[in-house]
Length: 372
Image (cartoon, rainbow, N blue to C red; front, side):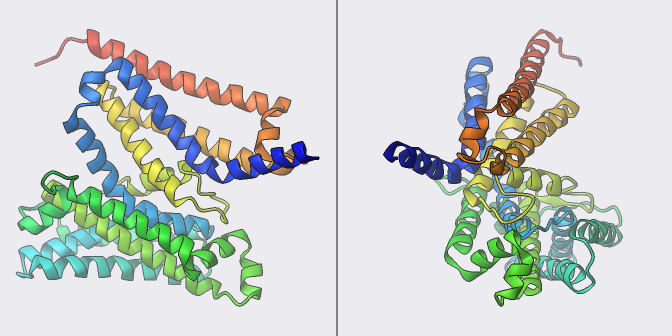
């Protein structure tokens, strides 16, 4: 009896960390592979700095998207919100002479208002999250194109470029500090406030949450407002990083952020949030894309590799959530079943294909003759 109790306790202790174990294992695999394939280029300080800068851009959005997805929602408009907010900020600075210290908060407020519009469309008009945010993505992108008229707005004040690519002397880049601060804030908001508890309750069972007195519609709107503000902040950081902005900027923000959150273990079916997992998911995707670039693999193959990682991660997390398949023991017992063994072999095959792709890319890059 004591042995059985001990085994059950071990499983229960390990299960909450599944969200973080998955991306950490993949991060470790990338580090080992790149340590063998391209240690000098991948682990140099300038390249690590590039990885952190790229990851920092997505951290605010991943934090906010964690709340949205946990509530069984999704936001496909964050890329357009980032671009539109940044375009308006750029016009305020360049054409209307606004101080950058005023224009930046205005941009974030505009993002929050656009998120509010998303939330109201979904809750008041009962439009599904997927359709509603996809339609608003087109609307916001259209407004950005109309405002910019094909212009590229560039050369902003130093304060803005510091937000996007500045560095604290002897410390980490300023965008990394901003990104990590938002992730810490999101973690505390999720774990220490009623909003975080209500978010998980709504995602687990919206009807039950409504019956217990939770204002489900209002809290869904709050999550979309947070997501809009975070997207606008990312737009500000992107503008500072490039020292330029145009209407077509940030076209794949939504896919990258959703992928990072899901890979990090937040359930697409709601009710399970993993803020630390979202952080690791962002870092994982940035490391993987940087590794593919370091190996000189073409952009199209980078997309293939990213898709493989996303599909395999979502499939594995979805399967592990079906703990009732084996009657007891949770995911550890499920892995010992014949079906579990087949799933593990399938995941191993996908990972093997990904490693083979990386190896082929590294070999062909080394033997290719530079043109021009």
